[in-house]
Image (tube, rainbow, N blue to C red; front, top):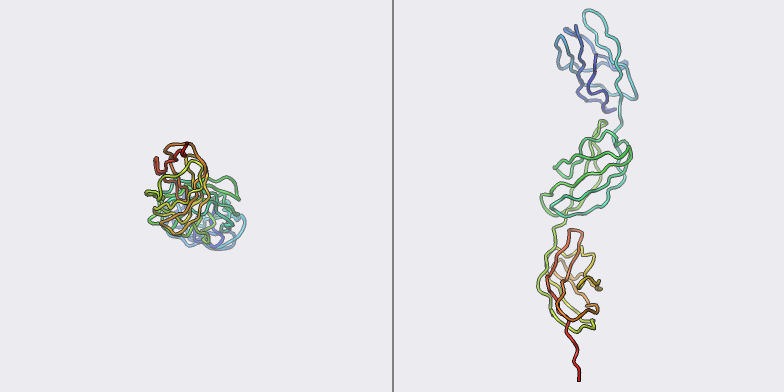
Length: 247
């Protein structure tokens, strides 16, 4: 006589189906000493809503013909989440985050706001999940659903991918040291600015503007790359290093 699922929340409320023979007219289904609520019954199955409980308990079905042999049902506590990393990512989704906590081994879903994603369980204290596409930039709640229930409490922030415009000025001496203003969008989480692969010191002025100081470079045009928590944007040949005068 199989039982499915054979585990559920300590708070009860799990829909459980017990299959077998001669089950018609079931008058009681007990989880340990507690009665479950019968919601469906046929000669070969009984569907119930589990009561609250803890640990492993025997499940029996009582019909006019007697009481069945017991099956094991395991109560699982609600998951606890301690951290999520990284806590931000591009609105398009697709990056992988790691969630740490306890009671995660039976995780079946991770919700980012209203959008569910299917996790990969590493062990009882860790899982990974691919972030789904966000509806818009901004923070959303993150919840994990397991056989023990659903736990909220973590937050993830979607960040729009950056864009970059024309640098001002867009040329200067190869020796570097030129203060440059870089316009664009979604620049507030900028992590690095590089000129032709060489990192430059920078400061974020606003979400639409960055100030940077050019590093030394070879004469010619180079790409300027802005990297934020939402991704990268490239100004192709956005800055030109000029040769110094010679006499």
